[in-house]
Image (cartoon, rainbow, N blue to C red):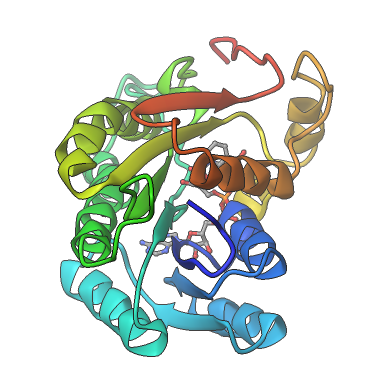
Length: 257
Ligand SMILES: NC(=O)c1ccc[n+]([C@@H]2O[C@H](COP(=O)([O-])OP(=O)(O)OC[C@H]3O[C@@H](n4cnc5c(N)ncnc54)[C@H](O)[C@@H]3O)[C@@H](O)[C@H]2O)c1
């Protein structure tokens, strides 16, 4: 599917990886980009910077009604939807037992699953409903769904029970979702990023980000958000990519901690 003239819906599009996808899509001639984010002010600031083909909507991916309203607002603005990129997500670290052997909060676990996993499925299923209305291209394609997992799906570290569960769930979702959507010509691909330089690390203790930047095998640095956006573009444009998870991680394998 061409990225040029296509309409994108990007959850978590106001920051980090999602923001980079929005910027690359606009630079590549997308027909429209819906920046859907909990942080409406940041989404609006980015949309204003990117111009007429960008449109901000406030969406909390924990709420089905808010997702549906955001997708409908995008349909009203641009009239169609071809590519959904799921970038809304939160990091979380909490050991299952703390130093006093007290069990972790189940509410925190539920919250991470709600946002990262259930929110991803909810956005994807409602976006696919709109994509199914598109005229197919010569290859029979009507749309592309991109999911964002993480290295933590495979190499979960100490404290990552909730986060790794949510990201492993996305890996597990990839093949059945691509099979479910194949009758309407919608492909599904998952990207599992390594360590990317985004605001998700802003709350980390001093020095930890610098340490993390030294851990990838090659290149030995954090990933650039545009390197993630570049892979999204490739996924959209290469019709033979479907039902698979791609690690984008400079050969990094995470240690237990
Ligand atoms: N940065 C990394 O190294 C890295 C690595 C692996 C996976 N990821 C994943 O990539 C995705 C994007 O991460 P990022 O690094 O760009 O983070 P980020 O914090 O820069 O951006 C995340 C965006 O999601 C939004 N968001 C959070 N909760 C939301 C909700 N309930 N509804 C709607 N929007 C919500 C935030 O407002 C923010 O704009 C996340 O799913 C993250 O887990 C990031």
